[in-house]
Every structure is written in C-alpha cells, then in structure tokens.
Image 1 (cartoon, rainbow, N blue to C red):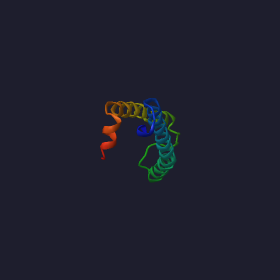
Image 2 (image 1 turned 45 degrees about the horizontal axis):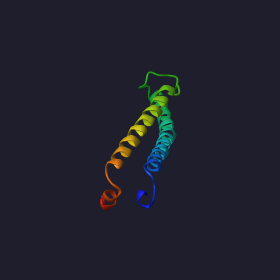
Image 3 (image 1 turned 90 degrees about the horizontal axis):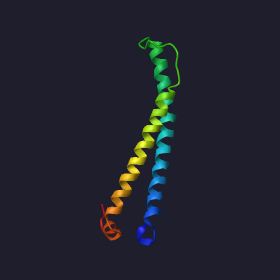
Image 4 (image 1 turned 120 degrees about the vertical axis):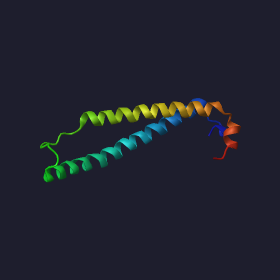
Length: 98
C-alpha cells in the first residue's frame, strides 16, 4: 500500500483498525462459543454430580479479563508490527516475498 502512496500514519492506522476488527471477532466468537459450552459443561457436571456447584453464575469478571487481555495483546501486536514495518524501506518490503 505504501508503494502506491500510503503514508506511515495511514499504515499505522490501518494496522490498528485491522487489529481491532480481529480482536472484536475473537471476543465475539469466544463469547458465542464459550458461554453455551461452559453452561452445558456445568449442566452435565451438575447432572453427574461431579461438580459441587449447584447454581450457575455468569462469569462476568472472567469475560472482562478476557476482553482486557485481548485488547492489550492487540495494542502490543499493532505496535510491534508498526515498528517492524518502519525499519525496512518500501523497496525492501516489496522485494521480500515470504
């Protein structure tokens, strides 16, 4: 993208938005899959009497911790990617094919 006129700032913003998009997707998938599976495991454990818990509570603090951890990882990865991209010239990045 920089070869056709994208500035460093635009590239940084693009990497950040891409990271936010994937982080939001990760959080949504983990909630959509994890909560029903966790509840099903609770119900199974309660029915088989191998879990000593009788009431299911939504794991609010764990979910918030997950979101915080994903956000921190996204910020760190965006920073590292941005820094690594700035170290090489546009020509060197185009020349590198994998």
